[in-house]
Structures are given as structure tokens and as C-alpha cells.
Image 1 (cartoon, one colour):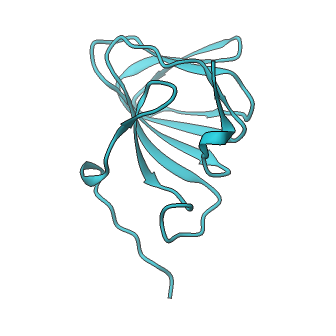
Image 2 (cartoon, one colour):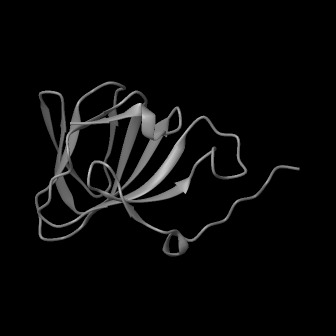
Length: 122
């Protein structure tokens, strides 16, 4: 029988990620009893802040839950807001700008699953 995983975001500890976003690792195949080819993090960027430029060896999907901002991918600047999704290809330089006085909240789905060694912070 498959393992059922049920979590509440409020009970997951948060930490300051290398890119200076506030993260909660919601689901990770290296830490949870699940065999999935991706990981999921719940992320926040504080009002009017900018994450550090970084690059992942994995592809990343951002799903925006609250707020507005600008996602910079290479030379592209994409306005983002609640209810939108953006796919960031592997090995692309990226960072996020919160353009409002509210938190920018989003999910990050990384495939293959995120590992610290697969991320470069600039």
C-alpha cells in the first residue's frame, strides 16, 4: 500500500534560502517517504525585496499564490501575480522582485528534486 502524506504548511519550519527567499520544504523525495521525481517548496519574498540571482541545474515551476512581482529569467522580465504559473528552464539565471508592499507567495516545483549542490547563487 502506498504511503499517504498529509501536511499543514503552518507546521513546517521555514528557513532563509540561499537566494534570500523564505522557504518551507513541503515535499521532498529525499526527506519524505515518497518516490517522486520532483520536490515542492512553499516560498515567500518579503515586501519590496529582491531574491539573489541564482541558477538551478533542474527545471523549476513557480505557481504564484499571493502578491505581484517581476520574475527575471535571463534577459526576460515577466510580470507575475496571484493565479499565474511560469516554467523556468534548467540552467537559466533567475531572480524575483517583489514590487508591492505585500508578501509575494508562491510554490516552487523542482524537477529533478532540488538539492543544494544543484543551485548556484550569484
